[in-house]
Image 1 (tube, rainbow, N blue to C red):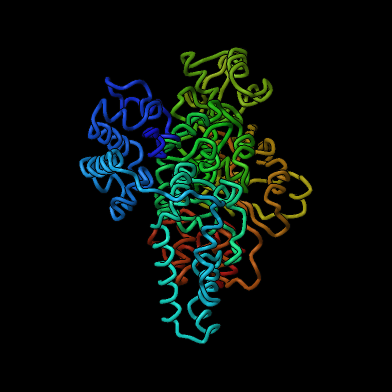
Image 2: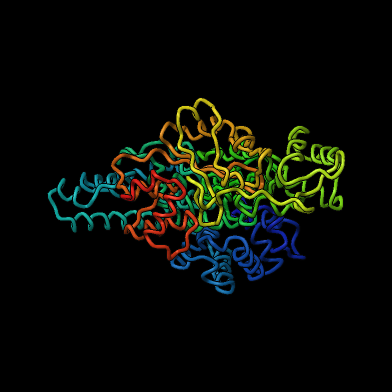
Length: 609
């Protein structure tokens, strides 16, 4: 015998040697003995059961998901039933016994059966199998057994004017006919070819590879009028065809095992390919297999988990980059239809991310100092300095560490929240005897201001032509005070398309939000709800103008930003009351009274008051 163990067990040919050696190392045998010496010599030196035991251990450790017949194809002839089971199902002792039995038979010194010499190409013996069939049998073979899209029993029954059961019987007889031929000496070369194919294909391969495996696969079986590879495909038992791939065992199972390899996060592509080959996928198709697995993606030469959530995609992008990125950079690398506003809002709200500069976010697990917004960072610098700090020092510290301008830092230093103690020095307002500004109306009593479930107050802007042209617009004093402003102060809120300045001279005024409206493709009559986060970002939500057919109660709810259906007017009033700061048990008249005090006449009009 001149066959090595790797000639008989195909997975040994595509599994990395470094993975095989620690499991099958044998002091009596040379290095890489499974491919270096014939099987009979290895068994003579170490013992047949020792060799079988090594192969069984390897099967459990590396190929537990493969069918036993795919690991050692000769098992299909000695134990056909067990060949359709996996090592994980059978256990090491049973697998070793089956492998040992194959080796014993193979090494018996009995004369080998004489296999007739194959004097003609393999397709010709296959042609002979179907040459003796009648037209009906060939049609059933062509259109049902070996068809790309199988004809139904009813279609064939109508075509040949017989019953469905008769078609089923002919189909069964054809299968038995082919099965009997495969056990004959005339089919020995084809059986060996199929065994070779299993080793070439591995546990997953693009389906087109079967047609390209050898030139004669692309030829045609003249007796049936089908490509040869389609007939050969039916001999590859244990392979499932799914989404353009041939997969040994279950495709869903192999996809899940592949996903689990990357559950802990991104891996470099080269390392990922090696990991996937451990599942039996050939190295030359491993990257294509990774790309074919849902919820995995190759990103900057790394394989990353790619779930449905935008948050987890952003996390994967940052993990691969290894450094903070802007929302624009994250959006570009995700490369899907997510709005910049949505990405920014998720980065702000999710604890996995930390804002590390004016327009950059990193992963919270990286540590470091969080960017809190200019006003908050000025307060932090004052606290570090012991309660009082030089404006010049604050400017130097912040502009050297963050992407903020000197003019912005100086503007915030002179605004609400801080007070001068001596020339060029400031402290946090209220740490002395200065009283905080109290507006005439609280935000809960302020027209078009509404509280969300998280306690944050939002102001509704009804978009008009002036907004779209880029004009500024007034803000109610109650809402401006809620944002921490006071007369004479200024607040700069960041947006993806540029800063929006809110200033308070005679009255609070918000600068142009034209770029924000352009991001939403907003038009006249639309509504934009906005507020400012603790980090100094302008948070926004856009609602298109309500359709005229919307019921009055729903129109009233729409104006507070609520778009889900309600079951009754009572539920609608309760929701409105909660959004304007009333307790849960507030009655209809109390809700209507608060709306009148606030001046929300548009909402009152839809409530019939």
